[in-house]
Length: 400
Image (cartoon, rainbow, N blue to C red; front, side):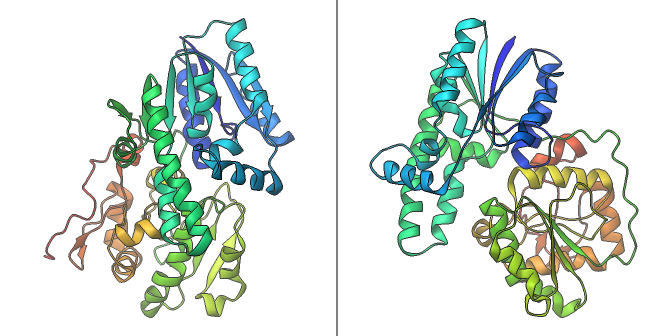
């Protein structure tokens, strides 16, 4: 088939959640079909990264994306007077519509694939049968953000998630096929009005050449790796540092907590400004590789799923704390618990019990039941890389 792939970000290099998923999907499709990539670019570096994909694709086309706060303010005002969500107005582009229309008029394509919700508007405008790759049920993210705010900001977020929910349901129904990355996202898309079938295609990574890490038996560090400009990841790190880490420190006063991620906001940077006050939090920029540590609580979503798979491939024990602190307070996925105290116990088990760490490295399953909760780091998204059987989250068992 000839596929027109529309992406919000250039899927190269695979160094963040959406880029990772689409990069490996593109590699898979290019082996079997003829793919034309059309993507937004933000700077010269992204333009070069797009050109590096020409060996995989039949053709690569880019459209500059220009964002500014004053423009965002205008889109926000326009959204208040419209049924369209702010996110869709912000990413509207005449240049993208024009390029897609010219390509469809000039060449023959069998279908268009919209990568992320923001690109569906261009895929539908192309007139081609559309495959919608929904990386997230976006409305749920904004719903959680709204629950954590107060005042005018909460009101704006409440309006946005309701508009997004209606919009996501509508574009799902207008698409020829819909893909989700998890069963949870599928349920959320159905709640928005999407019709079955919705195919769940978990995030997968290429682990060829990934060597098991050489861990020190007395490793004490706790490592969070996530893009630090994504709100759920920010929320997860702040929740862990403020509510969970102090409990861990009671048993392990010297265990450092490392926060690694690109473009951290001021509140995350402030965690490392006063280590004594913040409990020894250390922060760093984006890292291509890191030294082995004990675990990976924080953040969530696509990037966490990919990093969890790579962590297991490298033989490192760890877990993840769900999509956000809001979600974590309701229920935590991965190494899961229903309260900060139980999450701290789970992390302590990984840190203090060599047999548990060994089992985690080998099978991704923690063979210990603490505070009546069974813990596991392996989720549905890790199945392609690890072959682990999916286990229901937070399955309660009595301690043996």
